[in-house]
Image (cartoon, rainbow, N blue to C red; front, side):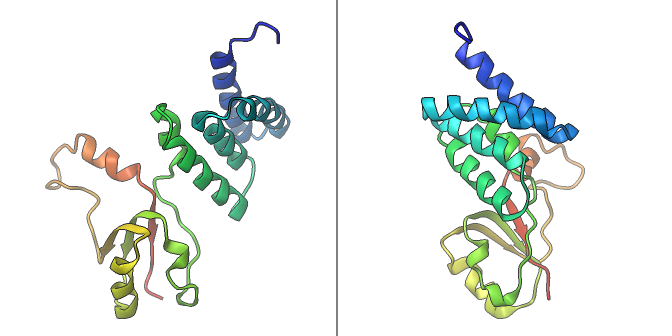
Length: 168
């Protein structure tokens, strides 16, 4: 390890963790994650800590994975390496929600689609500063007429975290 190229090895470890996680080879992922963690903590950069959180999220489920993905997105937004941020953001983030939860679980949502007729909820969404773009009702997933090439508009829409509330 004396002559490892810092950048190349770091990128390779990130890919190895993801490949092992997606192929069901946890031993390879865990070993690579340990090496990645050592390097990321030593560097302390937003990119390194962001890909570390994303890599760890790939190896767990539920609230722990959700917490790690959000941490990764926060770190990677401060990095100049955009491709890892795009790979970290889910196109659609679906989570359990009920009226008893209120709108607190929906905070920090970039785009929120709310196909519901619940007047109290619809009044509360625009007032919540943590929800950047609330949409009510049936909204098309395009900014142009159907059938017209979307260029970057569709990719911009798809690369945002989203939440959907169904009428309960």
